[in-house]
Image (cartoon, rainbow, N blue to C red; front, side, top):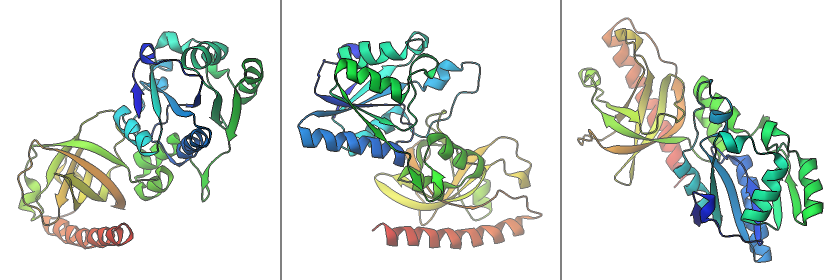
Length: 316
């Protein structure tokens, strides 16, 4: 896959089949769009191309609000698009000036004249340009004027859930429902982290833990609670249980992430790892005694081991 981080790098090619979007998460709905352009390109001998943005447009359009947390970094998006077979990824640096571009200029000057396209594949709710004035109808109108084709992909649902990035963020950040989030994403939610020093309390409980800090502070962190996870260390996935929260039993104030890895005792302080969330086990709890904590942790461990065994059985 060819990747372009600046428009100056992009060579005009009228034989591109394009789709455009932020594609945070590259979720199931995004994947339908992307597979559509890949299939169309393969059948016609053209090039599939994804035009995406960095940073997230909401950060620029609403600068006073809390920055949006990301399901995927730009690098993760690139990896997913490569896996899906995209030929070109074109990243547009999204800034204030770009946000003021009209929908007509976006189509005519950027997609048609600068990048080049023969077909434009869009989602059912596609809006773009200044004040999101561009719509499916305006795209179709310009397609007749300029001479490119348009294909509209319908709304994607899994069960009773409409697939969207905002829906998945809410499932993870507010509810911790990583199993449902995985269904909508088409893969387990994950993030890269660095192992940092903790206070060693887990070891005194008989459950030594590695404290983690997300590599990218903009990534979504699931809601407080206990999770069944897998942690990738040296290309190997190690099962474990992770607590995210403030540790109320010990009157904690700062939010931390710590993971107890099963059958693993190597020193990994300072290492970079990847965490994959399989299932939420329970809420974070306040206990009356150390003994109560240990009893619950043993129960959690057995449950999490069952979750991981089932995962291995279904994903050999």
